[in-house]
Image (cartoon, rainbow, N blue to C red):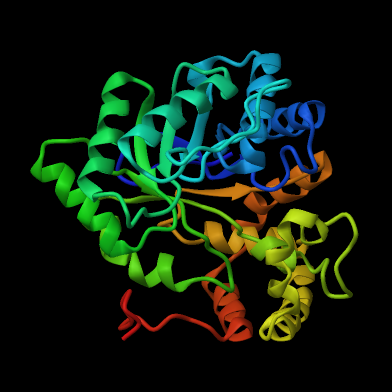
Amino acid sequence: MEYRFLGKSGLKVSALSYGAWVTFGDQVDTDLAYQCMTAAYDAGVNFFDNAEAYGGGRAETIMGEALRRAGWRRSDVVVSTKIFWGGQYVGPGQPYHKGVNDTGLSRKHIIEGTNAALRRLQLDYVDLLFCHRPDLDTPLEETVRAMDFLVNQGKALYWGTSEWSAAQIRAAYDIARREHLVPPTMEQPQYNMFHRDRVEVEFAPLYDEIGLGTTIWSPLASGILTGKYNDGIPADSRLALPDYGWLRPIVEGPDGAAKLATVTKLAPLAKELDASLAQLAIAWCLANEDVSTVILGASKVSQITDNLGALDVAERLTPDVLERIEEILGNRPKPEQNWRGN
């Protein structure tokens, strides 16, 4: 396993990590979560990602049980959660409820939501705590102060953002520096062959200027880059899950046919590199030095094993191979673009 610093912090995370989005609670129970996490850990993965919203909190409960069962040294794992939408599920026999203050990034919800997440995870602290989305209704200084409070309380070691704009991240950083608070360390953006501009262009100044780290999600574009949707939507895929119908436009939307055609063109290159399409897509993300870790999502141990093979494939991505990929993708961001798109 390769380990990378989380931005310019001193924390090292495995270049490939494992996340609970969609799968935990929907496709993965505690036994399977334990098996998948163990397979990842045995291969050197040390970062496990979660959020209060995943499965309404069930994903944190499942991961917490798996971590307890595994019995790994706490210092050997990096665990994250994200706060914004609330975690409705507390446990068997507990009420399924979300109050008016159970969402957003108010000081109240950040502190109470984090405490609830820690109970579900059965942890005293998380290593990484993310603001899962920007909250336009809460003053940014209130959010920054609440995150600083949790870090100083020892309930989180680092805090960051997810799907924030560069301007929002920079504003939070500037508030923290001005008020002598702990600034954000990392951002969790979507990044894959079809979704590039934010990581490669919008955030570009932040990597050097504030030392931003990135824990990128959806490296397979919700599975389309695996090739499994070339002939339709399989019944056991995440796009077939009742609560994830909003993902179906990825395949069935106006750009779906073009994306599937691109995946078809990538297939011969993957075969030439002795790689699966999934391994090629993940390896391509790893080739970006501004990516601290690529979060994998898998509902089977076999998927974990296959995806981890991307580390070997990444070593075969020479400049010539990367340029061939660019020719197939045809979507290289223009360096002069900025976050406003002009």
